Image (cartoon, rainbow, N blue to C red; front, side, top):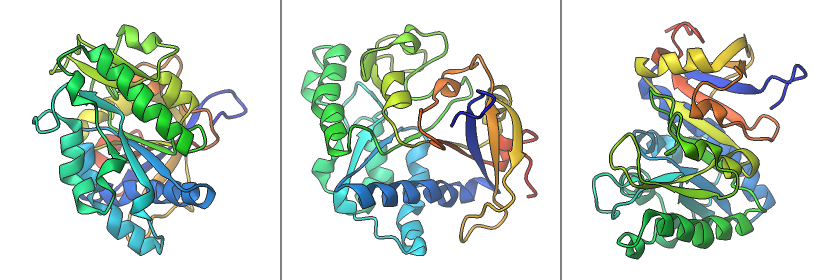
Amino acid sequence: MAAASSKYVAQIIVAPSKTSVGEVLSFPIVKSCQSALESRDAFTIALSGGSLPSFLQSLPKSFESAGVDPQWEKWHVLLADERCVESTHEDSNLGSIQKNFTSHVPIPANHVHGIDESLLGESSSAVAQSYEDEVVKTLLEKSGGMLDCVVLGFGPDGHTCSLFPNHPLLLEENSFVASIDDSPKPPPSRITLTFPILNKLSRKIIFCGAGPSKSAVLIDIFGESSELSEFAVSNVEGVKAYDATMNDPAPYPCGMVRPEGKESLVWVVDADAANEKFPIDK
């Protein structure tokens, strides 16, 4: 969302505790799913790994509370990034997503889109090209040319997906999926969505993070903010929300994620991550 001042504005939703982050995160995902399925016969959602999948366990209950049919059979789950390992490996994002989320809901197995593991012995670039051609572009066709929802984590170093500070991939302008073989975090070989698809072909992007290690990132990324006094999430007391401008130049890769649509960027954090930047009464 671009404000009249030309500053980019994101919405920040602060959960009162880490234990309530999942329910609060579910709120914008439910809205995104509902909007997508009112318009077309598919809901495409890209997910990160790390701690994020554990926050998705509240989704079924949140759909029920909202009185919204998720129509799981119409969901297509793709990977915002993936380590170049088999899905049974402990580092696999797909494995984490399956364990914490998709195995608990009736999304068809062939609608959960992992990498082509037969290409792992070839190169990470072959894995990335295959994922772009066979998964991402196919799902864009199903969802009107844009991903409906992208849910991302962010690290204390400000990375998101497998887009790391000062890495050449931050300058990628053409590919939707790129490979990286020198990740500063192990394992070194990965694939990742890039800014061309995140910023130009995503209807809604939701960041999620919890804990005091994330606080400095929020302080550096966001400038002025104003509280949204009428905001509420059903079944969760003490939630606060803000509109906040984003600082330029963006100090971290996660701050460079700025989808073009109106009100298309949401950050969901807990009180420890929000700290004094976005205060909340605990």
